[in-house]
Amino acid sequence: MLSQIGDDAKLLAGGQSLIPLMKLRLANPTHLVDLNFVPEAAYIKEDGRSLRFGALTRHAAIEKSELAARIPMLHDCAAGIADVQIRNRGTIGGSVAEADPSGDWAVVLLTLETQVHCLSPRGERAVPLAAFISDAYTTVLERDELLREIVVKPPEKGSGGAYLAFKRSAPVYPTASAAVNLVMEGDVCGDAAIVLGCVGLVPVKATQAEDALRGKKIDDKAVSSAMEAVRAAVDPQSDMRGSAEYKRTLAAGLVKRAIAAAMRRARGERVEVSHIYA
Amino acid sequence: MPETFDKVTIQLKVNGKPHSASVEPRLLLVELLREAFDLTGTHVGCDTTYCGACTVLLNGASVKSCTMFAVQADGAEILTVEGLEKDGVLHPIQKAFGDSYGLQCGYCTPGLMLSTYQLVGENREPAEPEIRKAIAGNTCRCTGYQNIFKAIRLAAQNMKGA
Image (cartoon, rainbow over all chains, first blue to last red; front, top):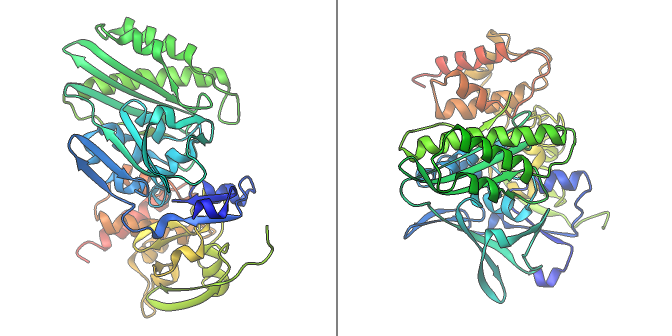
């Protein structure tokens, strides 16, 4: 169908970003294809070790899912996106496919092993999330292709992850966000993944911050060097949400808190973290 | 972009009553409710998916009716503020908002009452942080929210056992 109606068509998932953009005439599609009536496009399934999320799975369904909560940072993210009404409507597939630099899901999922399954008349292909998002609001989806499913591999035993975002009020996009996933071997960090949101055209993978933790005992000194590396890795724009300098400091602070929560979770503690707002 | 569109016939239940309408695909759900069905209790505040004045329940889940199309509600059940009162008797949520002075100008109130309906439906003993989270998508510019919290706690209390 997409190949027939042409270039200006848009797919409508939850509509919580696209409809506001259309009202502002920032998006002006000639055709809108509503996916909400596609049966069985919303699900959370376990498949071997992986979790599979149908593209139309609402944030609220993930927030309430015990299966999804096996990866606590997925719950952190789902429970804090916008507000109740938007979580009841917005979808994980829509969020990832929109590739908004301020979106939440891609930041979290990039710290995990995530594959995006894309469907077109030519068949289905699996693209690693890091390769799926090519630029701000841009993905590798062809114009006759849609995001069908997101497959997430839970991190290995002994790991812990956390997602934190700071926003000015509930319904708005965050000012900055941070996802941290740590593989702990006792006190020593075996591996680390750190990704920042809202501070670049695409989510920023802070590889030097990861290096600052990997193979080390996570103490104040290691955390400080990771924070310094985060400040250097991000490239925020000054806007109504805050100055670039403010966002650098905020991103580093969020990473510090996310590391602390991730370490406690790696030890098996229950920790509640989510979006922070006034 | 064409100026007119072929209309689509949709059928839905609003406050328990079946309705049918012929609508342009671009019509928003809130416009259908207010302009076609004359259910003007659902308000348009910001029209940008922020304020929650347009909150209604769609198949039991609260949504911002300014941020979905009327055609998407085909086959759905909608609850608006007009559906809370039964046979001239106010719903306990409505009564609690009145008794607690949980409103001033009243513009945000229908949306807040429907967010309360969603919360209390799942949780008859909401703690303060749960109430805050439940109404985070509803903006009130008059009250400072304190009496709204009181109203929600009172509504939950009065609905226990119901």
